[in-house]
Length: 369
Image (cartoon, rainbow, N blue to C red):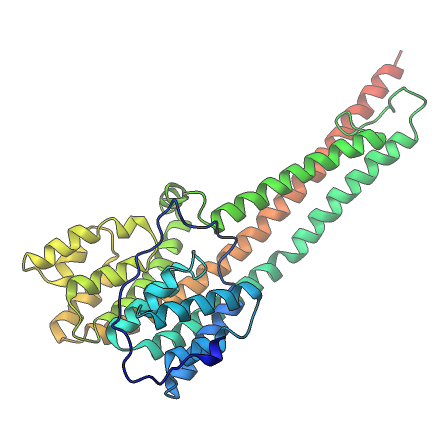
């Protein structure tokens, strides 16, 4: 199908903008593109653009590889591009398959004429996400194995307690009243409900079915956690601002594009007020400063960049610093998650010991004349 399209016709249709699908008509999304696929996709497109390959030929190639859904989504994007849409608009209409950060940065790249560089930077970003996820899972693997063994041992203990019971009489020791096959089934149902609820919550958050903005805003006030979340947002924002200010793009649009990449309402709700400062004759530093939401090191760097006329270069250096801080934050989360799992394992073990010991004391008291 895609091979029959004429990509060399002399007159392409004018570019048009696709509005995102209405919330009522949008199909349910069962997951965005995975980080590994995103890294490969961004690297392929960036390499193709660097080699001078036309964007439609690149998407024709992408539509022939990957999972069935990926092939379909790439083919749909190709159709919209052939219809005159910008790449960012064509990806926006893809039923949430592409992550917001990718679309926002592609928009920046198209507007600034640096699409090739954006794709290479995105490939690096998603490669780093894959590595951090792998390191995170590796860091909590052993605690999770210990938790699994603890849960398994408790289930085995419940089953064995039923084997030593005499007739319909419960054994002298039970796990909070659970013993035997029936107790094991109840225990397994409780564990399944807990695991299922956690998996469902993660799935709902990942697909943006639940608004977690209030939770994020609350976490941003927690010492240690808040600065890390802000560094994640600032690393994306400074990178986008460096891209946007490297061309003659309008300052209002540069602010909108860069701040939107934070994907955090703590910052994005201020875009309108910031743009009004610019239209009122203010400088970019004034727009960011009046929100009282940006750190001093960013404001100082921005002011220095404006005075020197080198905002893009200054922001690019600062973006690397924020990225290093974000990596440290991920490492901290890995350690914290491992400790949390160890604590859960400890609570489980202590609960078992308490249940057994308290019943054992009861038996001793009953035997005491």
